[in-house]
Each structure stands twice: as structure tokens, then as C-alpha cells.
Length: 348
Image (cartoon, one colour):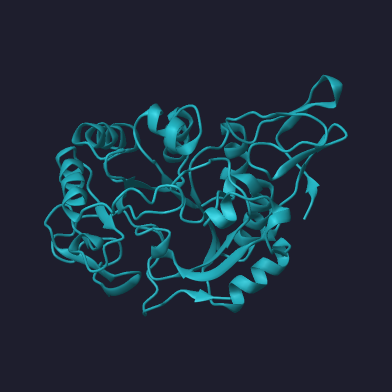
């Protein structure tokens, strides 16, 4: 639904400058921003996607992936149409590379969303599938109500959000998984359509500094961002700027959208990336999109004991005592409590 937007300023000739993300779009009357979700109407900026939900499901939190945040719980997962990236390999391109007029959606106000979250026995809300930055106004209002009901509010994001918007959102955001899609500007320009990686890194560093639970995902793409040198630079940044406790996911690429000419990532390449991460001191490293791989599990970084066994998104074993290893007593970086029992995604 259309509502007045936050994060913008008036310019001469009824133009506006949006400050929601680092694009800082200057938008003329009647035009849209890069994300296709914000419109200048007669010198005022509106969001066109407030509560306009194009996809929703009750998902395991592990699907986000968030492996160290309220494990075993379900997150009511929602998305709006649009994105501030133009990724050539987007797996959700049919809902991310469109505007609200091109897809079927349902307007769900925050109060109704909380009701649905509780009806489907979810512990919180995940803004995911497309880029949640584009409906930050909605996420803020949802987060306020979620916290009153003891529910969490999380982002699965490309990290391309302004610090100004992040500051206002942060009081109502409990966790995020940020996709760091490569570790060089060239990839971001060629593949994602944005000028620089640096705002993404700044977002991650800001979240850690301000106490938002963070996990990062690096989608390893053959011939694009998979060199040992680039992966080592990424891992050093994680260890030095975010901290060795931040869970790091290396995910397998499968051909999608405009990059079907690329092969799927080999498991060997993913295992090499994991080895580099461990050499650089990262304590929790995962391999994603390879069902049944042993490094989809959580192990104690001190003694190697199996702590959480997973298959796809199901938790098969949870062996921590409180937040400590049952064998050596080392403290493990886990936020929230474990909810026992298998769970599968539930489409609505």
C-alpha cells in the first residue's frame, strides 16, 4: 500500500532526494527510485510497498540462514516486490526485479502480521526473499509490535542501507544475515549493478558495533569470486572487523536468471573456502546448499565436539548445555533459546 516515506529531503523543482540507501536517488515528480518501490508524487516521496506482501511462509530460522539465533524456531517470512540491487544471478528475480504493479500481492498491516506470526506458531518475523531495506518503514512498525509480543524481527539483506535508516531501524531489529556477495568493487558493479562494496561492509561493522546479532553469507560463484586470494581477504575482514565469533556461511551457487551459463560451485571449492576461513581464525564456518554436508553442523571451536547436527533446515541434535559445550564447557555464540522438534517450511 502507498504511504508517506521516511528518509528523504525536498529539492528544487519538486524533486526529492531519497536517503534510505546509499543510492541517494534524486527523483523527479512522477518517477520511481532505483528500487522501484518509492515514488515522487508532486514533490513528496511515498513508499508503494508498505505491507505489500508478495511472498510469505513459516520457515525454519535456519533457512535464512541464521544458525546461531533462536535455533529450532520458525520465522514468519515475508517479502515486498522490488530491490535496490540488479543482481544477474538472483534466484528470486520474478519478485525482486519488478515493481508493485507487475505482481500479485496482499496488503497486510503490522497488526495483522503479528496475528499471522502467532497463528503459525512462529517465534518472530523474517524480512527476506527480496531486499527488506526497501520497506524499512514497515519493518520498523512491525518490529515495534513484535517486541511488545516477545517476538523477534530479523533481516536477510544485501546490506545496502544508509546508516541513518539503520540507526532508526536498529531498536527494532534483533538479527541479520547479510550477503557479502564478493570482496571487490568490480563484482558489485558488473553483477549487482551498484558502484561499491563499501556501504555493505559498513553496515555489517555497524551492526556488530551496536549489538545486532550478525551472520554473513558469501555465495561462492565459479570464475567470479572464488579465488583463494579474494576469499582470504574476505575472511580477514570478517575476523578483524566483525570478530572471529561471527558465523560465516559459504553457500553453493546454482545457475539462475541471467547467469545460467555458469556451472554450480564444486563442493571442493566450498571446502577450500572453509579451510581458509579457519586459517584466518573464524570460529564458526558453514557450507550451505549442500544437503547432508558435515559442515552444515555446529562444532565446538575449542574441542571439536558436535554441538548442533542439522540436515537441510532440520535440527537433528542439539547438545549444548545452556550456551556451553557439554564436553569442555567453552561458551558458544548462540543468541536465544533452542526450541526442540523438527520443523519444515510451511507455505501459506
